[in-house]
Image (cartoon, rainbow, N blue to C red; front, top):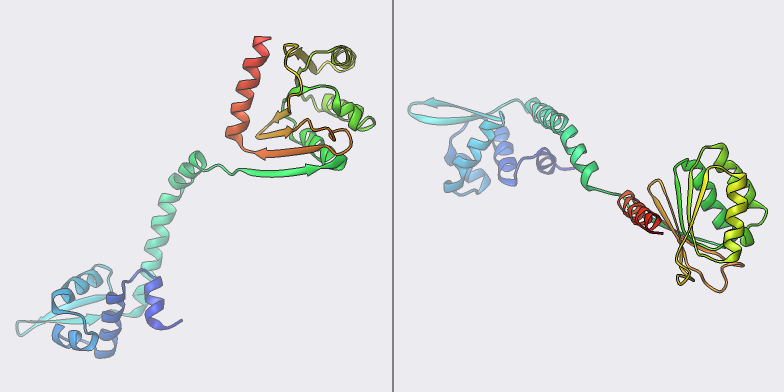
Length: 246
């Protein structure tokens, strides 16, 4: 890195860098010599010198009625770094609060096949937050007949509350009755009978999982996981509205 570029990284402008380097080369000198050395217009030179004095890199004395400008020791540059660090440390707590309020990280992942669906369900157990399930129709027990009893038991053991808004048919009514009898952490309600073939939606923590009801769902299930607290909170509000409406 050349010297002028190094000065720019410390916050000096191009003109300030040129003038400071010129002063280090010339020593105490007048503005006319600085102008000749740097090529900076006389209308600009005093403004540049004033900024350098404000940063503590230049001083001046008056000799025989004329100003002579002196460069300060380059180690003064460390003071600029310390001032910047101090300013950042003072502002950082407020800046972080602002960032946390306004910046939300949104991640999306796609899981295919039965192993992918298992991964999603295992994530629900790890999250240990209430699970809201909407549009279910007993497909999980068909796709993962051996895994689902294990999932329900783990959810109960971890005190995970499960609220299910299921489609309404004889099969789902029977399944709800069996599950709620064995697992007291589960609650079921049923959507109006005319509502069928919905996509399945799971909400837990800061995550929303959407599973389209495709013809191949039993052999090759597909789950789209979106991590977004704002979206998850919004879907929970929608779920609770639907729950209280049926």
